[in-house]
Length: 160
Ligand SMILES: [Ca+2]
Image: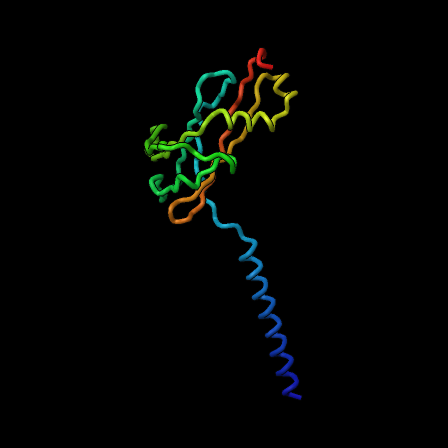
């Protein structure tokens, strides 16, 4: 009688352990790796279609404890698609005492990409469209970072 009771308790304990183990395996599989939030500043804020400038600048500021010199620039993608050009520089463009990484992107493919996904009626009515751009990458130690900024594209009426 006692043996049967002990056996049932052991069986229950074993089942609970299996459930706990499976739950932790499931959590480990579904949890996203932690992402550090970066401050992204894309310049110019306003792009005029037809303007001869051919580059877009992007400044990446990381939170305290992370250094822009440790960014793996080859891992950076704008909207998961565009790679930055070389070379890149490290400075402090907004003079806030926090160093920032300056990377450049080719302007034309990004404008084409945005224009493909916008509502043409909105452009006809307002003459402009606002787009959110995300910039993501990794540090040399594998830490992921991500941030977004919005830019405005102004379309001259004669271009429509
Ligand atoms: Ca700065």
